[in-house]
Amino acid sequence: MISRFFSGGRRDFSSLSEQEVLALAISSEEDDARIYLAYADGLREEYPQSARVFEGMAEEENEHRARLIALHKKRFGDRIPLIRREHVRGYYERKPDWLVRPLGLEKVRAQAAAMEAQAHRFYLKAAQQAQDADTRALLGELALAESGHERTAEALAAEHLTEEARAQEDHTERRQFILTYVQPGLAGLMDGSVSTLAPIFATAFATQDTWTTFLVGLAASIGAGISMGFTEVASDDGVISGRGSPIKRGLATGIMTTVGGLGHALPYLIPHFWTATTVAIIVVFIELWAITWIQNRYMDTPWNRAIFQVVLGGALVFAAGMLIGNA
Image 1: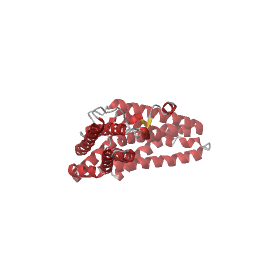
Image 2: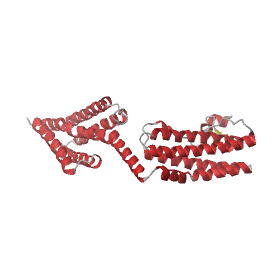
Image 3: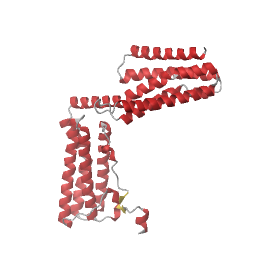
């Protein structure tokens, strides 16, 4: 009684009877089959070939479940005890990643591999604990089957995922990543890095007070981040454009806008004005170079055009800030 209180009502795996172990295996196979089908549903629109792979894996889980039920009927009858993962202390849990949309292709594949590894360890432990020869044999077979699921997945992938199909799905995933994270984040970084140059350096040269300059830069960066984030969320719900979750895009835009502004505001925590200004100018060049690299790397913008756009725009804003500050 006391042990159950401290364990939150969960049972130790070693305390389960063979009937309860079989019941746990049956419910686990059913859950895994449903998860694989959920993966298939989440991937079907953008990655139809990978969806077929997970459908094939769900069929295998259902076959395992049928064999376990047949053994349970043979040994214990038709009534299967209700015992699930959450009832057993230390038993592996499935995080509800399959409920999140859109599903990332590589993340789903990695999660499936982790699921099979966990199931393999469970069947090995269960087989060691079983006393009945038929039960031990079946659990051992299922342990081997789970360890071989990686090969099954590879076989299914070879059947449904041709090189052309895989390349197309990888391209679709990269495009979705760019639309949801890179493009909004780049817009925010450009806005935060460039638009805050004028107020920060105008304040710096007008007051030559590093603390005041820092406060203005902090306010401008956070304010711009909030504004850009909410604007991104409100501008497009992602349903028609396919740009993904507006919350994710808004966070990417808002965070990168704030980071872009803080980059050249933080140096003004240095008390000496010219030292702080020199460091801030160096940071500005680093920010502009980072923007140029991202444009070239992810947006396929030629180096010369990216450098011209970013450097010219940054130089004009910086010059405006200096002229206004020295007026």
